[in-house]
Length: 403
Image 1 (cartoon, rainbow, N blue to C red):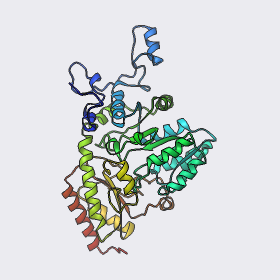
Image 2 (tube, one colour):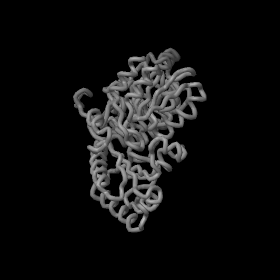
Image 3 (tube, rainbow, N blue to C red):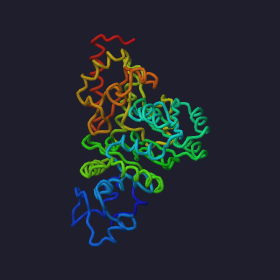
Image 4 (spheres, rainbow, N blue to C red):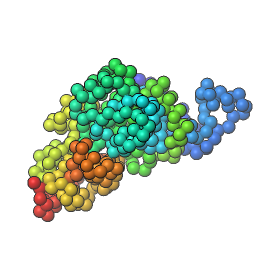
């Protein structure tokens, strides 16, 4: 007998959550339902399902049985009332923002958001006459001042991509709620196992499910969680605009989530160990990881996170030229624009998180050209350390200028 959802831990919930009612004819795995439409024996039942008065499915753009299980699993992990999913993480972000922001509204956020999110703030929302105020991420006082001036949405990302800044969710959520704002938090880097923004005052939580939730770099997806009232509004926007999660992708994400707690445990451990090693290396300028005592936001991270995540960034002395020599030397890392996978992935923001931005825009966000984002996989930590050591030695021996 499976314990109640209130009694089981997240590791067990990531395996079993949301699946029990969907297993058919003794199957132990959730089926992939590819049907576009769903039939009913009479129009009255059909109508009641269409209106949401009875449980069921009408059309694949709206809901799907496989997708529904994925949403339920994430909902349980985040401790939310409701969840809805999307074709990508950026679809989740853009759908949330365009659901709640109208011409004349104001959104307050930070300068350090993911590059695609930053483009929405700087390029798209202003075209719809939405006022955007981006604040220095580290300055909570200024953030509170801007929030107090009034806003419809407060959008936060913590830890940030790629410089791993950490934001005090609880403090800023209180400020936002005083002016009636909706608090949205991108929890992709932390995952529900390391951080639960809803318990800290957030109204909606966003994940690029492509990353840690799926964990295998083989399926795109996004998901949001929160109150039924807010999620219903975002769902309505998504069902009309059509950024629907594919059922096969939902199945792959579900499969990946079964090992989420094991992957996160190893990735947390490796990232912290690697960050400590790099912090003391003579050819490394800076290390960005909230688990380090030296991190400017370590105190906040320690209060609101159970673990510090599998992603760190570090800047090499020698800048971009050192990066060019260093990355190809790595034997246990894909040089690719992704993170959160079972394999280690590494790359500079200029080709990954902030490829959409110019060098000047990256500099304004405090992202040096010599920065490397490193997403630790589930490989043995010692092997990753040795790999980093030999790559750093190769750069050093090549005589790249490091000052």
